[in-house]
Length: 264
Ligand code: NAD
Image (tube, rainbow, N blue to C red; front, side, top):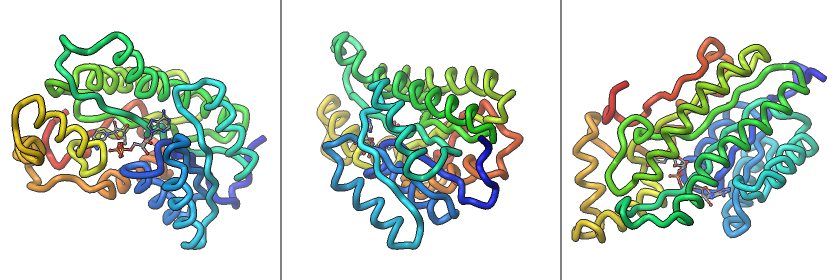
């Protein structure tokens, strides 16, 4: 059933307890959407704080604890969003993890674990959202977290880079298959964003390269033409556009929002 045009649109943001996902959730709420925020149970407290922040600004929010690599949990998550907020118009498959290790040391289990979140998790979120949007009948916006490493890998981030490269391919295929349903599918490719993820990458790169803490982020920051490390709000502003009707004629794109590190 098509949702009424007068009710606010509903977005679901995965991995929204902190970092880029949190910032996207706050921005979409400020844009006037009702927002469901997801994270894993170990981040439940932070997730509830994000929902409370949205509600205290006068918007509707709901929280859904789920691991995006679990197919049953992802289906139930989308069902819960529809129950709590009435429908689903915008899916942001943001959750992701990073491992920093030389390829020769990555174990098969580590590889599978990373892919289960960064690639299978995105696939599960994309497809669960698309099924819901097709059933609703009003089209929708599906948006995934890619990265500059989806275009040019970083050393010591091999499986992570491969997962983001694959998200770019999945985004293109999904865009082709679901255009007939009025669903657009795009991805954002941040560069170096000052979040817990980059703190972890910096620490591990420093360990591997015998550098002091902070040295790796300084080294990679020299690549940024706009001269500063990104903040999550830089990414959220672009995702706001991807989630809005202003991007209706854009699909299948994975767009760099990196201060000018990598050019497409
Ligand atoms: P972050 O580590 O700060 O936050 C990631 C969030 O995802 C956390 O709240 C975490 O609990 C959650 N999460 C992890 N596994 C999950 C799972 N299985 N199910 C549900 N939630 C899960 O990371 P961030 O920097 O905010 O990154 C967000 C996204 O942007 C990721 O996909 C990341 O790969 C991508 N990205 C980040 C950067 C960067 O510089 N930080 C650059 C390019 C791309």
